[in-house]
Image 1 (cartoon, rainbow, N blue to C red):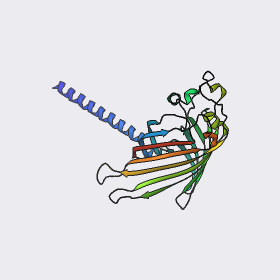
Image 2 (image 1 turned 90 degrees about the horizontal axis):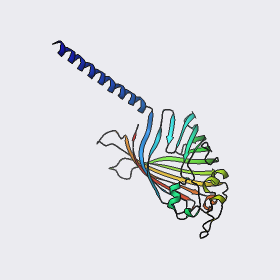
Image 3 (image 1 turned 180 degrees about the vertical axis):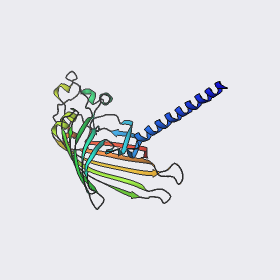
Image 4 (image 1 turned 45 degrees about the vertical axis):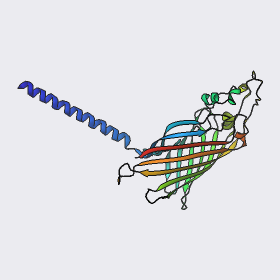
Amino acid sequence: MKALILSLASSIALLTSTSYSLASEQSLTDKVIEPAYGLWSIAATAKKSHFRAVDNQLGATLLIFGGYGPFFIEANRFGYNFYRDGTYFSSLIGNFRSHSSLSKDDIKSSHALRAYELEERKGSLEAGIQVGRRFDSGWVGRIAVLQDISSTHKGQEAEITAYRRDTFKPFSSLNNIRLLTTMGLQVQSQALNEYYYGVDNHELDTANSNTQQNAYQSDSGWSAELELIATYDFSWQPGGSKDWAAYGGLRHYHFSDAVSDSPIVESGLVQQYFIGLGRYF
């Protein structure tokens, strides 16, 4: 009898301990997830490079259109609003620059670039400040200045952008589709363009006399940006909360002659496309 009582007591203690452990883990999970807001998603991406004869690049990435706690996240940009009054706002921002990068695999995939002895052009981390204003027409304007803080290109970029969100319903049987439209104009410093698009003498393959190669020193320049993202909110259950979303979009950059005149560049146009699926928090 005493053995039975001890066995029952041990079982109860084990169940209590397991329940407490599960509750603690659930509580910790809730605390980790709670600060997240906006759309967190996984996206399939495709990029058509502006470098000569580089293969199209396919991949998958985490894309966030929201934030975590006091920080906002907009795809490759993140930041902290230190002033906001409903009309005007000011932010400290960071930016991952990848659309100008050229990897070792990209160079190997291009018969045109293999004629050189090119070093890779790495992506960079930039930081700066932006100020903006919301207009009654629905447009939001922003001005930002960014400085490379990763010691990659060691240059700067200034930009002015405007974006707006519109909603339309193409079919009565479907939910609304939201369209984000962004237009921008950037100015890049000579140091930035020289790192990504300049060709130094030591990168010329002097042993290969069958191809025409030219050194190139890039100057400061500018680029125009267009981004369109269409988002469709839905629920997996009929009549349920629409806390999931599917989206598709594009982002194009068109660079000036300071970039397109480089002998390692095919054209001044960078094309990026993506589709994704995510959940709202």
